[in-house]
Length: 116
Picture 1 (cartoon, rainbow, N blue to C red):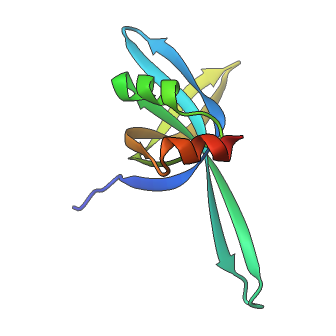
Picture 2: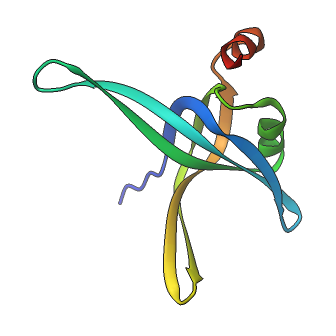
């Protein structure tokens, strides 16, 4: 059986990276917005925005929290994960991407100007 859980996305950071600790390991959480334009049957363009929560563990997450700000365009690579928990007797679920690698899409000077 073939099994692959690999996601690659580009987009802008919409929610500032928030570093925290999970035991002895650091984890950084943020929100990525992916924009995509598709064509409707009528030929008119339709812009789709997809917001996805991301988690980056360890040193890569620490670097992400230090250098990435809102509106920073990035490329991420990782896997789709499902978090489950219970609150007030109700089971809750949340999908997110556990990022294994990331990189800037623009040089720092261009990124700084775009964020202004």
